[in-house]
Amino acid sequence: MIATLSTCAQLERDKISFRLQSGRKRFIDKGGKLGRKVGSVKTEEQMKVEYREVISLLRKGYSVRDVAKLSG
Image 1: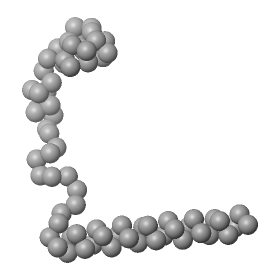
Image 2: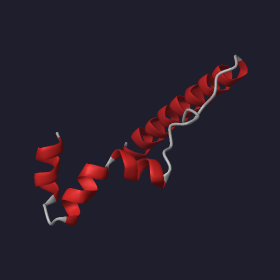
Image 3: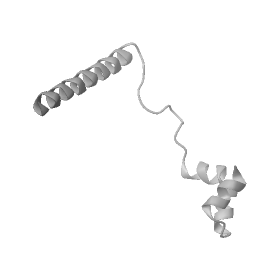
């Protein structure tokens, strides 16, 4: 009984995996791109500039919770 249910579950997972793979392939064939968009990853310098206020509060000894409350 358990073996039968296990086999059914495995078949269902395989079917889902196949549908996902075929959908991705069709999307790519139509010109779609997978993954992050270009420019969505920030450099360390960009992060430092963007979160300058947060970094300074943390260095002054504020807790992460307090910084989160202050910076919104």
